[in-house]
Image (cartoon, rainbow, N blue to C red; front, side, top):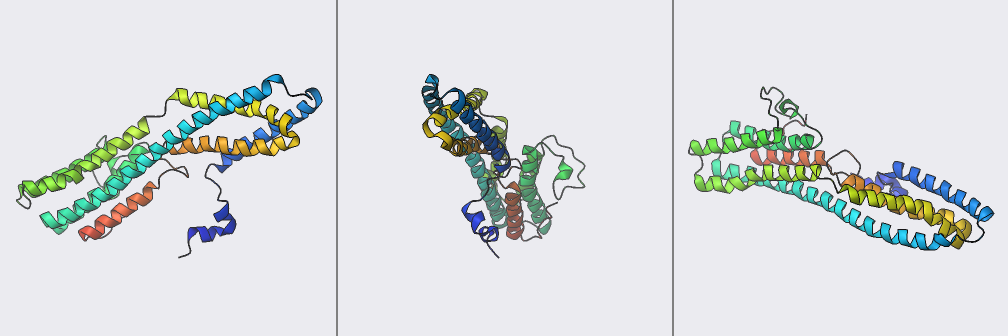
Length: 290
């Protein structure tokens, strides 16, 4: 198979467009036009640099740099924590299937049921994080009559009940149940942590101050650059805004990593991996994705 980078060509590898490119170029264009207007006004009405231009530009640059550093780290930490959580969900799903086969030797029907639950949970969690779902929306549960309010919790409860039925039937003892329990607990632990990320936005005061700083940077810095660089202020300001505003737009996307933006986590791919792994480890047919 041809690697994705090769399909994009040399330019696509060397200069790949970011997912935020559409919004970013609009901001860069607006800033460039404003800087050009400042250059014209400066040449005609202010041949000498305004007294406030240099000092205000330096102060704004320092403040914006500090705020962007905080903003970028906070947003990326949320994205990376979410990625770790989905990695844990994948590993616990595999270990649950492996241990269930080794410890309980479940019947073919129980293997299919466990595969359905393990494959359905990440799909339910994905759609739960994106705004909600019904049990019938989960692959393998299209004919379900139950209507739980929290579908991931319902599926995790069904997995607990399945393991408890093995213990009640004597297929496993208490020690074996304890070895399965951490992997069952991980389902709702991951769910709760993902809900915390989704429902806890960054403090609005930080975002307000950062965006105030970006606006002031766009408005004030061109006056300093025009005096210092002349016509070169236009491309220099465009490059500066490209990176400053680009970092802010990226942070805006990755701070909520469960959506459909280009920089969000590929949750569908994670779900497909868990589904395929569960089917392979339990020796059943791969459940349909939809």
